[in-house]
Length: 490
Picture 1 (tube, rainbow, N blue to C red):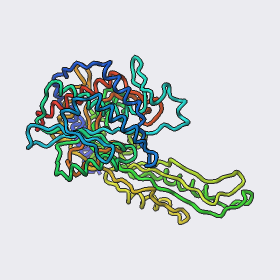
Picture 2: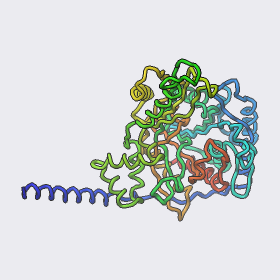
Picture 3: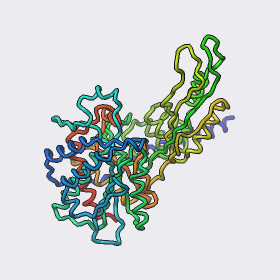
Picture 4: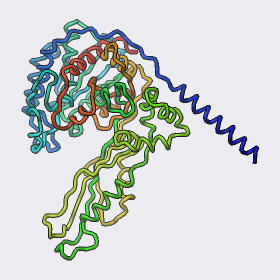
């Protein structure tokens, strides 16, 4: 008995020593702090240009008949008038009616081009939400601190920021070694099928292979991550997939005075409750690099868990599942978003249906989601069908590529001196146009140099969207330096 106890004690001590050693080995990576960016930006000029861009009501809609081509055409005319050097010096073409593609020819045809993406379209404003806006959503109002309006965050700051940066470089007679493409789709908010997908197909037909793609997606977190008091530049290396399923129940109608045991609404409600009570399995694999990068800045106990996932993986996934934000990073999510059924308080509804949206973790698929939902509901009275073709998760891009490292270096340059900043790879929760370019490069990244607080994050696709003037200037500085740095890439 004593020998068994001794063995167990030695094993426990050895285990603790190993775990502590791994914890202390999890240290911060050395940061290359390059020289800050030297560029003099006319703040009044650039903020007014972005304000004007917001005033074009380039709303995308699932219904093609509601597409306002005139708004896009007028915005294109404004871009050509405002950025004449870009249109004069770069090859440019309109793709599929309203998407824009620019080519800045590089001196060395042997080098693979880079592609900077943004999108022209914005999400609509629900009529009932108009009165909640501090300033009209398409006014582009500028106060002392912010530029207000739909598209300031998503994604006209990227689009105009890229063109402003390109103009600066052209004025400096900068000549890129590698070709630089600028691509601006017109329907990202409804899937990008007619915009970015057509641009990608066009480049593929021309046998173009890219060094990397950079789109929106990641931001600079300022207080978004619990337990981390430093700013974090989150570079998206993958994005979750998307599918929506309709749950539909048909039942006998009739008078509410003689109800069945379960009405159509009751049966449907139980199905939704069952789905919420049985979430998809957790899998920290695709966000582990993100958390391990942040671990040195977290509490010792959290750091120990992250350093020893060989033994603490289940505990880690359990803890991450407690927060909606971190839970979404480690599993396919389930969200009932629409429901209808019934026309009068004393009439049994003959049918009821709901829409449930799923954001699919890499490793899962839309087909797997459908099978999982049917298994959980397990009720022949409920018909489960996709509302449209699902979109599987993107591929995962490498974090050890020269492209990733150069984007990270440029972030530090745009950040300037004296401010702590962590750069971490990140799984993007939403969808972007970038996924359309997977056949052209394995290096697809998602990042906008925008410092984002918990208050800011609520403004995406929501009321009172705005960007600070200071942040917008940094957006321009970032794109300027990124294109400049492309001459030293690889």
